[in-house]
Each structure stands twice: as structure tokens, then as C-alpha cells.
Image (cartoon, rainbow, N blue to C red; front, top):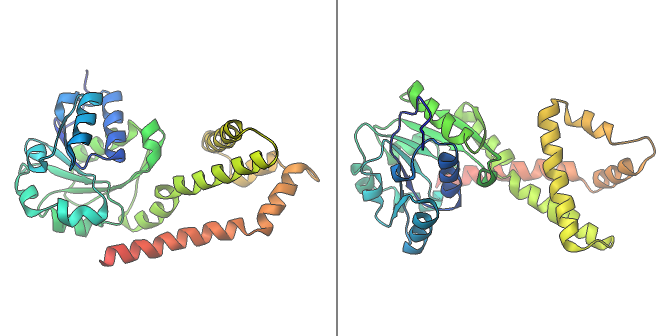
Length: 276
């Protein structure tokens, strides 16, 4: 598989082989960034390692230290609550001195990442689960030691499975509340709209397809048209028509306020997690 020119990290290791790591691996392989033989994964269970080995041809193993030992880039892909147990001093000691670190762990700051991996350049990211279908949104922020080549690698990796934005770290928590947690909100909306469709007499499968495709298409239209969401709403909202009646009902039930509260709840919880 041909590698994209300019990719500096010739071997990549993941600490953690869950769904997000798998989505990134799929993007890396699909984009031709690296061969499967150049990707290493350390994961707690042998069953998961066997799955990743068989499906993608990567080098998955239960020994995290062995997984990172040859990597130019080490991706921390465990849950934040597991980080103190997984990201040990022994693990970091096994890493190459000239390696660098990229984290997809939510609510773990660059300063905290430096505590886990002292002396290593660090990139913190906030991806979301649509990476699994090549439609992710990833925010990327870098510390001062990160080189342009490292930035380019991070951009290439996450562009292979969605859209990216480089941001200041101070924006990451708000981004987490919007795009990081956003798929969860969207699935609640899809489920609720599908339930309403069933209530209106539609078969369940059709109702789900209608709701999901409508949400996916609306997002695509918003991005590609460049129009403000309010303008797009007005295009489908005729005076005295059916859509405005539905929007009126949503406003009566405080949908906007609910989303404001959801974002603020995420920010509050993120602050709690960072303080632990």
C-alpha cells in the first residue's frame, strides 16, 4: 500500500484498541497512510487483539510495552478513567526517545499528558464516533514541542476519517460538549423522531431510516451550502405551513434550552474529571 508523501511516523502504536482506535486504524489503512504491518495495538483482552489482527492485519497484542517499543507515534486511546493504570512509567520507558504522543482521551489536558509522558511532544485531539464511517469531526491542539511534520501527520491521520480543525486547547472542552458528545444527542433525536414516526403509523425500520437520513442530509446541506442554519430552516418553513407548526411545538417544549443545558452539563462534568 502506497504511503502518502510527507508522513513522518513510519510506525504507529495504539495504547487501547477500542472502537475509536479501530475507526482511526480503518482511516489510516483506507487512506493509504501506512501498511497494516506498521500499526501496533496494545489491548487488555486477547479476544479483541485477535479481532483486530484478523480484520485489519495489524499487530495487536496484550503487552502494551511491546506494542509501543518500535513506534514513532504512540496514540493514547484508553478511556480517561483507565489512564492512570494503563499509562504507567514502565510503559513510557519502553517508548523510543524520539517518539511523540497523540491522545484521543477526553478531559485529559496537555499538562496531564506531560505528566504521563514527560519529555515527549504531545498532541491532544477530540474526535467523535462518526470516524467509524469516515465522517468524523476532530479538533487538534499541539504543545510547543510539536513540529510541523508532526502536525502534518496528525492532520493526515484524522483527515483520512473525517474533517479536522486545529484549535487552541482552551476551546477543547466546549468542542467536546458540541462535537465530541454531539453524536449522543443526535442519536437521541433520531430515536425520538423515529418513535414519533411509529406513533404516526410508520414501520419502525422505515421511521429510523427516515429520521437518520434526514439528520445526515441536513448536516451535509448545512456544511456544503455555507448557509446559516436559520436560513436553511427558513427555506423549509412556509408561512402558516406544517414545518412552522412543528417548530412551534419544539420551542414550546424548550428544545433550545435543553441543548444549552446539555452543553453546560458536559462542561461541568469535564471539569470534575480533570480535577480528579
